[in-house]
Length: 206
Image (cartoon, rainbow, N blue to C red; front, side, top):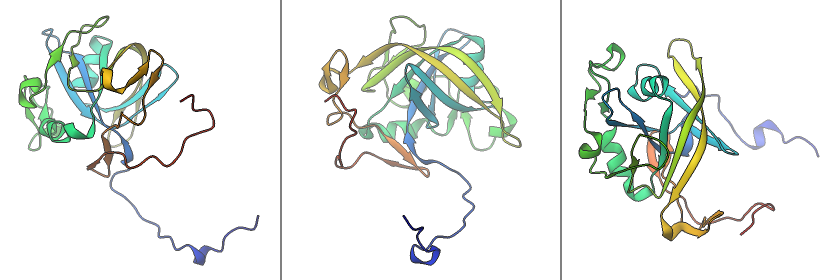
């Protein structure tokens, strides 16, 4: 196959301030030192097997909580929850507010109430699940690796231990219905749902 001539498909070298090129939103619930549950809205997340990888900024309460108590719930909201996710955006669970967040974020001890979300006890971890999220994955910490230069963050590896799903998106105990489940997508700081199905991989079982 001959390479395409560069001028036939125009491109432009750009320098985006962010690289949120479209990933699922996660509402991460972790345990505060006072045994209450914090909610961290974030979108740097992906899964491989029973491992989930998260990217969390230093100075946030979610990362601090994971270092202190290595359990969490990875709650995945659908598109209908975007406004409740956004309601959490200006808040931090850190008190006092870290210097890097002052002037932009403010302390909020009750994020469930602030976003009108419902806490539900988990089965195997202490942080609460979020009832409204169609997928709720209880997980335990495997490792945290520090990275970044001017902006520091933690690359968090989790192991999934229990998965809860709303019954309307379940086919059977081993399969989620991809036609019924749509994640909320964070695309260059804008919220989207999924569009129409385009096809499926040859390894799809349903």
